[in-house]
Amino acid sequence: SDVTISPTPLGEDLCRECGLDADWKDEQCHAGMLAGAKWIYDELKRHGLLDEAMTSREFAKFRLRVIGHSLGAGIAAILGWMLRGKYPMLRCLCFSPPGCVSTERLARESKEFTW
Image (cartoon, rainbow, N blue to C red):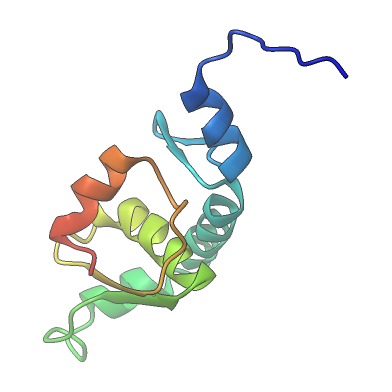
């Protein structure tokens, strides 16, 4: 049997194999988790409930938390990045997220608001 070796950078192949081929603001993250986070983000915007709650006097002392487990933890982390600009006090609590949510750089940057 023959073996063929092509000169493709390992980083690109590895990202594609793990599903890290979806772009979000020029960063790479898992395509399926990004799709889930975008859907939630779009629904929050469409209904305006999060904006209403966060500006309400009734909930003035509340803080925004995004929480998920396993696949949901990956989605929570990505959703946190999406919402962080508008809600800088946001915190994410991610239980047992998959090891392929995003690039290492994004993971490092999220340490200040994701546990």
